[in-house]
Length: 134
Image (tube, rainbow, N blue to C red; front, side, top):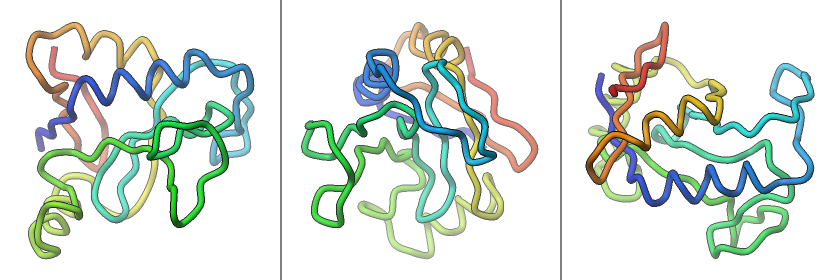
C-alpha cells in the first residue's frame, strides 16, 4: 500500500538523526553510528528518529520523551490515529504493515525519497518490504 509522509517533517527527523552525536542500539541490540529513521507500525504507521540521542520531542526540543512531551513522529497521511477514525487507520495499518513492528531505514534511502518533487514522500509498505517510490 502506498503511504504518504509530509516531507518537511521527514526532513526534520532526518536532520535530527544526522546531527546526533550519540546513537541508541537498534531493537535487535545492535549499535550503529549511522543516521537512520525508523518506520513503526503500532497505533498508526509513522516515521521517527529513535536512534539519535537525545531524542527530538514533539515540542521541538531535545530530551527524554514523556507522556506530556512524546517523541516527534511523522504519521502516514492514510494511517494517522490523531486525524482518522480507529476503524479506518487500523484497517490501513493491518492491510499494509501487518502486525506491530519496526523497520530501520538508512539516511540514503530517506534522502533519495526526499528528492522527488511534491509535498510528500511516498513509501510502498507491505508486510514483506518497504520501498520508496522515486
